[in-house]
Amino acid sequence: MKGNSSTAKPLTDHDHYKAPSEPSIKKVPPKRKKRRRSQAFQEAMTGYFFLAPALILLGVFLLYPMGAAFYYSFTDFYILKPDDISFIGFENFSYIWQDAQFRQAFWNTVYFSVIVVPVQLAVALGLALLINKKLKFRVFFRTAFFSPVVMSLVVVSILWTFMYNPNEGLINQLLGLIGISPQPFLTSPDQAMNSIIVMSVWQGAGFQMMIFLAGLQNIPNHLYEAADIDGASNWQKFIHVTLPGLKNIALFIFITISIAAFKLLVQPMIMTQGGPLGSTKSLVYHIYETGFNYRDVGYASAMAVVFTLIVLTITIIQRVLIREERG
Image 1 (tube, rainbow, N blue to C red):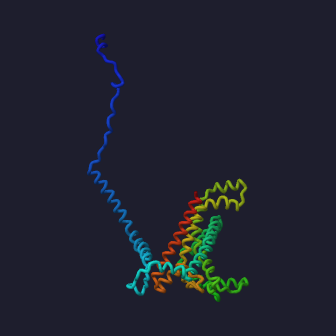
Image 2: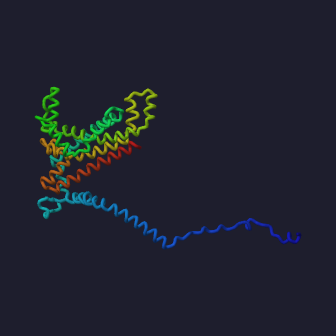
């Protein structure tokens, strides 16, 4: 035992330390890498295959017309002389601001949009509040208010044209029952645009009503219960609970109505043909009339480009305001 103890060496920290083994890296075989790449390629091609019809339609009916309109806006393209096209630079754009009909159509469109957007928004919200209550025949009224939306705008315009007839129209007959003399409506420069506004609000409010109705049903009931406990009136609950709950939906509806209002075309085309005295001629209708009735495609394309920039600017401003409001 003594001899063994003399030959034994004391253990040091170096003797206990063992170098860590290097982590083993599993190498993927080349065949498996090729399989993964081929599988990803097949999945991508399958996705593009299903996406191809939509891309083709988008290119044919949207991207190509936009590019053609931008190109023709710098030319004197006359539709009856398709082979005689020359580049004229910015002449079409400079003439736009001198065109009295363009200015009148622009201000008609602005007037229509400024009036129809808040009115339609308020009517849609009022109908949604009414339908949201537990009333009898609620389903019937909801269907009746929404039915004009699914009807063709051309058909609705024709029906309202008959209703606005100064001599035998339904509206003048109803006004006669309460002692009001017949109104000219569409034949008066002072009443024609307002008559189209009334018809447009009636036709489009049902769609926004359904969106508001969905938003009302998503507001938590406990907020109204807490307001009742605090003794809030119906008006206070509407201001402090309902409106904040519908804020994002109202902003979305505001943008959609604004864009649709600037694209006013069918109503003046069917009901007044832009008259009387150009009081209902919208910007889109003026572009259509210039391009197809007068065959001046170059100038119509320039107005279309300007109109696109106007709508794009309004959309960007609205989005910036919405972001600041949310922030």
